Amino acid sequence: MIDLHTHTTFSDGELIPAELIRRAKVAGYRAMAITDHADASNIAFILDNVRRLTGPYAHYFDMEVLAGVELTHVPPALMADFVQMAREAGAQIVVCHGETVVEPVAQGTNLAAIEARVDVLAHPGLITEVEARLAAEYGVALEITTRRGHSYSNGHVAAMARRCGARLVINNDAHAPGDLALREMRQKVGLGAGLSLEEIAQATSNAWAIVERCRARR
Image (cartoon, rainbow, N blue to C red; front, side, top):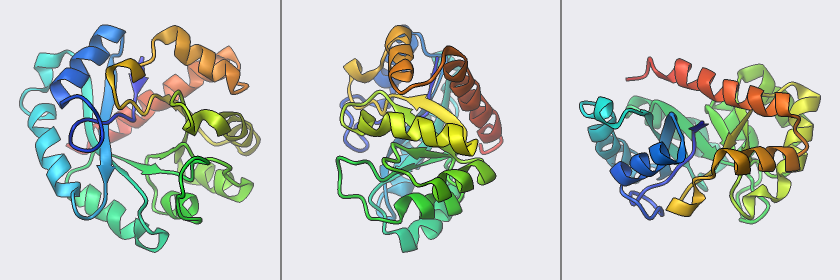
């Protein structure tokens, strides 16, 4: 299994990076990204510290770990600048906190993130067809999430991705040990969103393709 959206004590997660990685490994994950909530005030802090593990000590964990950020509640007009800031600070993967239906995310965030070429648009809520088609064109993956609340719009996201040819990934948005869904639950969430078993497998392949693309950003 693979997950590209997790949180540690560097934002609102419960676990330090080492414990999160270990628990993910025991749960059956082979690769993951640590993507704490970020804006201009803490991008460098998060990446400098997470990369202490994903750099010289990475091989000790027997797990592929990407150091990244989740740009969160960033004004859409600043999105491109903050994505560039994260890349320059060493982010191997950039996730954007999309327009989930359970938080007051600014309208226009989805479009701004896609135009800025983030790697993953997390829980994009009621994403529009225009946005989904642009995500397909730019190779921005749309997230199907196992997280409560954010998952309310999974069915819409799946249907829009299918209609527009956008890539999907399945992520946990893990903040606590219990958020690391096992294989069976991830499959159930995918099926509940209307995906076929083949589409669920493709979502996993899409996530691995993102890892391959991000490996060069070290």
